Image 1 (cartoon, rainbow, N blue to C red):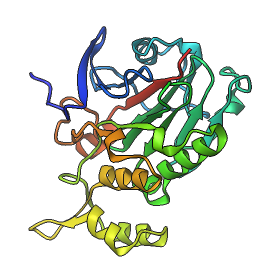
Image 2 (cartoon, one colour):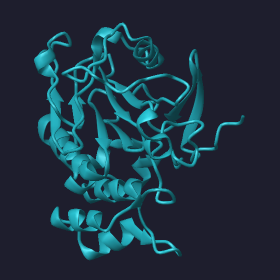
Image 3 (cartoon, one colour):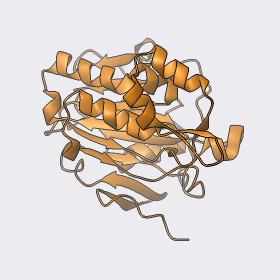
Image 4 (cartoon, rainbow, N blue to C red):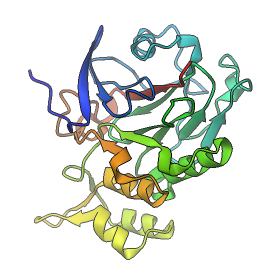
Amino acid sequence: MNAPAPDPSFRWSVEPWGLGLRCRQLEPAAQHLFTTRQLELRPSTDSIGQTSTAHAGWAHAVRSVGGDIELLMRLRQVHGAVVRVLKKGAIDPTDAAARPQADAMISNAPGVVLAVQVADCVPILLSTPDGTVVAAVHAGWRGTAAGVVTAAIRTLTREFGTPAEELLVALGPSIGGCCYEVGTELIDAFRALGADDDQIARWFMRTTDGSLRLDVATANVDQIQTMGVPSNQIFQAGLCTKTHNQWFESYRAAGPRAGRMAGLIRVRP
């Protein structure tokens, strides 16, 4: 079975556990990876959202970005817009209290691997040109409506002084507007959190059968651009997780049986 063709800005990489997906333009700055369903990553079940470091799948994922499992940082994702900053010299990966509820992480701690977990939501990885500050964002529809990626960029520029115009951003596979059927209450939710008529018209679409679809990836790209990141520094894998559910985990395709995939990025050592 041949892997689906991503946008030319992405490439498949052969890993010990199967195929991973990398953004060509992000590679020179930061080691990173979007996993596929060929690597088993089950949903977190413990109180802090941190799967045991003994978990073989996560160990494989971290090795694929040249990292140390002891420096893997994950959050208990809550489908919101809270951003966690992990600064050099101020984090302890063994400290459970250091991993609060949030949907975005930013770090400049050398060697730290940031990871977000998805199964249809948009995994977003960001880096400065030299890879010394990176971020990982989990953007479901709630986080997108609340502006989680704009909150992450705003926090990164404030805390580390890197202009948004210099950032490189990669969006991994997620459910596409082709398959993400939603109810009209989502339009109300987006409006309540500040989306204007032009944005609603661009992000939501009616199909010929009258159903409503949401293009959550495009919504995030638009938000990233409003923060000042140039369009030629924003890259999308362009692969729908539900359409290609033989390659990607998709909650819409598999329901509660769905596993999880990860977007991982490592701060330059």
